[in-house]
Structure formats: structure tokens, C-alpha cells
Amino acid sequence: MALNANEIALLLSELDFSDTFIQDIVEHDFHSFTMCLFSKKEKSWLFYVEIGTVYQRICKTDKIRKKSNKMQRFTQYLRANIVGSKIIDVSVVKGEREVAFTLMHSGEVKRMFIRLFSGPSSNIIITDESLVILETLMRRPKRGEEKGQLFTPCKEKAIDLNAFPIREYETPTFNEEIDKNISKEKLDDTIALLRKQLCDKRDEEIAHLSSNLHSEEKKVEEFKGYEDIKTSADILSANSYLIKRGQDKAIIKDFNNNEVTIPLDASLSVSENINAYYQRYKRAERIYQNAINEVKRLKNEIERRRLHYENLLAQNSKILFEKELGKQSKGSSNELKGPGLRVESHGFELIVGRNSKENDELLRHHMRGNDLWLHTRDFAGGYVFIKAKKDKSVPLEVLLDAGNLAVHYSKAKSNKKASLYYTHVKYLRRVKNGKQGLVIPTMEKNLDITLDEKRVKELLSEGGELL
Image (cartoon, rainbow, N blue to C red; front, top):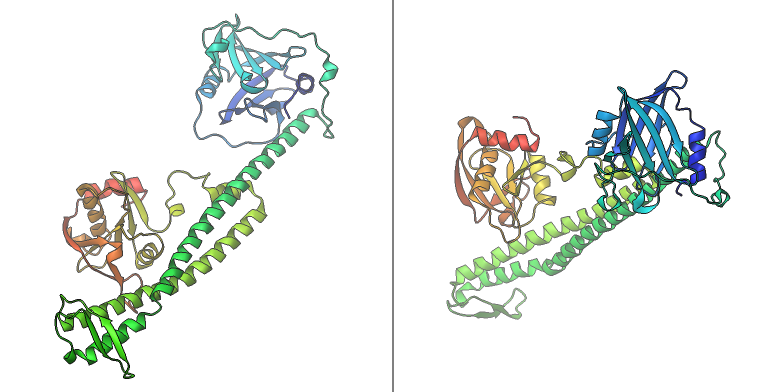
């Protein structure tokens, strides 16, 4: 609830600004800052100002609030021209929500008007002694609130002040009530908003995992009869002497002496048809087994994420909510994005798996079929992936950047050059019972790379990795 004129007057009446100096001004965001004050009588104390929000207020505070990462224009002006000033007078116009500070600095008088008005009328205005505007928190030319204009302070209103009662409070001072309860109200509202955002994030994440689970369950259903393909291949192999080239089907006896019809490709030889069936069987078995594993993993992951959000929401912590939503570290942390080193190249994201664990994790859970995979030939090393962009082919420069990273993160680094192969992730085949992350590429292309240390250094410096 906004402060009324009587409440503002009460707040100021509780404070002693005599012989008080402004030692520092700390910005918290565009709308709020704290003045660090000092006087021989009161020693050091803090005065909080928030303007232009539903929580706007002024009050003495004991809270040490977080400093903003980047100072706004207005705060820069305050620190350059107001810090060090002595407060000569603080007054409020009867019936109005305008507080006027008269300040003295190096023999020069300035005035600071804090307008705690509703809606877009709130503002902080700095003027000289003649009321010529020197700076404003919010520049509003249509209201005459901009640098160089003559400012007109509010005049006393003939209103019934009884119409604006002071809210009840139990704290020793009204300043403590405002600082404590409005801060709590703001925190509660912030937590409620973050909770909603967190629930939306949870629902989106679970929906995405559930969609993937549904797709994998469809694969299980589609390929569960993979053994039938092998049976057809075995029957064809056992009866190959009865089949002629050019047939589009084979009508033969199965192993139970029942007549079966097996479709053939008339353009292929008998042995090629048999081999095609075995290849189909292997592919179907691989897809089925992978889908079975993915169904199990996704079910576990869905349950794990549900429990994670359930426990997180139970904490009701602003700090934890912001951390989960990524509000505290928007810039450089690659850990929030998943395993591996991530760098940018001409608008494309390059991801480097630096060991077998990262390679396997990236392949299983972070890559899609059209993403590009690179790896050195004849040398152990990390996998490098280029994330695909819709309707865009990978430029040569991006391919060279990725190739240099592949050599840098391999045992070919000391040779300064290596041959690589690259293909789309969908053409990689896992080695059954092989080492973690081990794959065999198909449809691969070759790329020869001579290591460019300068190129690698530039890429890694952008990714936050040291050479």
C-alpha cells in the first residue's frame, strides 16, 4: 500500500537530519537506492528510497541491500554531485507526497525533490538553488521534468488530512514498520511470481520429457517385432536355392512347414535381398533396445525432476528460486547449459566433449540427429559437435573452428595436424558392449586440419576456457 501524506510526514518526523552528511549512495536497481548518512549525533545510518513501483517508499533502514551490477545515469549523477553534501533541511508540503531535501556541497546549494506520487507522476528531481532542473530520475519532457527546465514544487493543499489515516503499527517507530512490512510484502510478491515461473518451468520440462517418452514408447511398439525380420531373413537364407533374381516376392515354406510370402526387391540379387533383411533386423533391434533404455531413463528422469521441483518449491526461498530460474548468473556459466565446453562460432554453437563421460552424456541427452559430429582419425580425443540451425548449412569457417577444437582436444595436438571425419549424429552407431561413448560413424566425410593455435585461443577465451 502506497504511503499517504500523513504517513510521509510521520516518517520524516521520526528522523533527525540535522548536521547530517551524505557519505555514499548505493544503487539497487533503476527504481531504488540507499543513502549512507552520517552525523555526530546519529553516527552512520541508512535512508532507503524507492520510486516508481507499487512498493515505493522512503524510510530509515537497517537492511544491507544488494548493489546493482551496473549504475544507471541518475545514480552516476548522484554519486558525482550529491555524495559529500550536507543536508541543510528536509521538508514535506502539507497534504502532498513531495519531500524536499536542501543540500550544501562546496558552498553550492542543490535541492532534491522526491515525489512519491501514484502512477507515472512519481519522480526524483535535482535542481539548483533557483529551481532549474539539473537532473531527473525519469525524464518527462511533457511534464517539464527534464534538464534545463524550471521546476515548480507542490504547494500546500487545503484538504482534510483526517481522510488519510496512518496505518496501524506495532513496531517502535513507523520507519521500522514501513521498512519491515513493505519489504516483506515485496519479498512475498517476488516469491509468488518466482514460484509461478518455476511451476511453468517445471510443467514445460515435464511436458518435454513426457513427449520424448511417448515417442520412445511408440518406437518400442513399432520395432518390438524385430525378431520376425530375422526369421524372414533366416527363411530366405534356408530357401535361397528356390528363389530367382527379379522376383518381387518369395512364396516358400517356413521352419514349421507353413507357406509364407516374403516381399523382395526385384532389383536386388537373392543374396542382396537376404543381406537387406539382416540389415533391417540389426537396425530394428538397435532402435528397439535403445528405445527400451530411453523409456527407462525418461521415466526415471521425469520422477527425478518432479521430486526436484517438489523439494525446491517446499523451500519457498527467493535465492533458490532465482538460482533455478537462472536469474543470478545470466552470462558466463557453461555449467547451467549442460556438460562439455561451449563456444560460439559465427552464430553456431560448438560443444566439446573433453572426455568419454562428457562425450557419452552429450550424445545421449543433448544432441539431435541433424547436429554435426567431428572426431580425429587414428587418435583418441574429444567429440566436437556443431548444433544445427534450421534451414542453415554449416559455413566452412565454422567447420574449421570445430576441426581445430577437435585436434586441440585430442592426442594429435602435439602433431599440430590431423585428419578428421565428420557426419551427422543420426549416422553414428553405438558399439555394442563397447567403451563409454564409443561410436562408429557412417556417411562420414573427411577433413584435414592443420592446428591454428591463434584460432583455438580466440575460441577458448570466448568460452571461458584457459589454454
